Every structure is written in structure tokens, then in C-alpha cells.
Figure 1 (cartoon, rainbow, N blue to C red):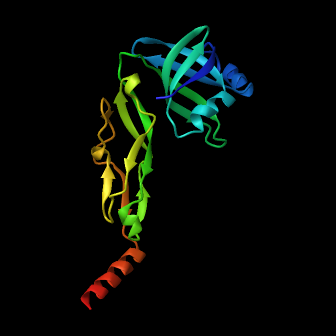
Figure 2: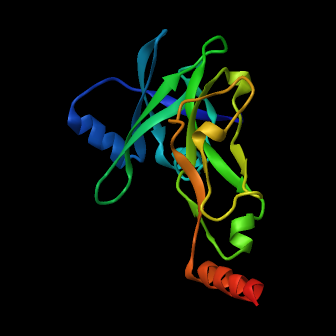
Figure 3: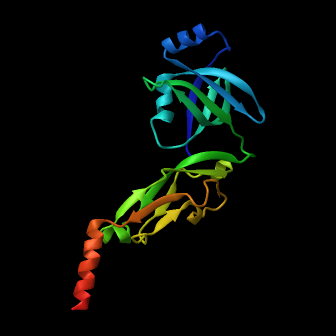
Length: 196
């Protein structure tokens, strides 16, 4: 999995007025925590967060705070309900000897057999939750739909990756090809032609 760097500025937990002042200066309050990590409170300039928030990709994030570097993943975000601006971010500390739990994007490849027959491809899930060591984390999960026929689907349980555990429930549908009116008409025409 790709790694990006993010510079954080140490901060103290203070009154709400100080937090508002921080946001007025284009900084977003954040916290880093983990099983073997004391909570570290810091802030990041909102423009620097775009590489995390404005992408479907997932990354290992090297946080540079007060002269030290911490490996982490983006865990959760809070946004303003009206402006959609980030209000707070949580980062989870990770290490080389502990499995990382993270969501990774799904990339669909191939030309579905069902779509060629007039069906419609429905993508239900754009990310899959996985667990793996840092060195085994994929940037994305590729799903080949070439043999996907009308009425068929691919679920999380169909995905098999070496050294990666799929945490998304097995029954979760990733994508499916649905019957359409065009496909029904084509099937009826083919049946009529065969009956002649």
C-alpha cells in the first residue's frame, strides 16, 4: 500500500474558543491513538487533508509531529453538517508487527457477459474492509466481471487474497448484473427465432 506524509502541529486540549480560533486559521484538530500509543492531539492544515479526504484511495500515513514520525491510517472524520468542512479527524497508529484493519477501494475490470447480453451492471460496494500486515496491504482489490452473467453477482465471500483477511461480511454483494427490458426483449426474440 502506498505511503504519504502529513505534517501535524502539536496542540493542547483547550477551550472551545481555542478550537474555533484554530479552525479560523485553516487548521483541523486531529488525534492519533492506538493500542500501544498514547493519545497525541495535533492539528493539520485543511489543504493538506485533501489528499486523504478527496480520494477513494487508502494510504499508510506517516504523521510528522514535533520531530517524530508515526505510522497511521485514517480512521474516521467529522464534517460540518452545512458546509461539509472537516471538523475533526481520528488517526489509528499502526506498526509493522501488528495487523492493520482498513477499507480499500474495489476496482471492477472486464466486460461482463451479462452486460453484452443487455443486462445492467450494478456496483453495490465501492470499498472492502480487510485486515493484513502493512507489507501485505493492497492498494485496491480488483474484481474481474468478464464471466458475470445476467442475474448473477459477486460477493465479498468470492474474494480470495494471499495473506489478507476479508472482514466485510461474505454475503455482501459487490456487484451484480440485473435483467433489463432490453435483455428480456432480446431473450424473447432469440427464443422466437429458435422456435421457427
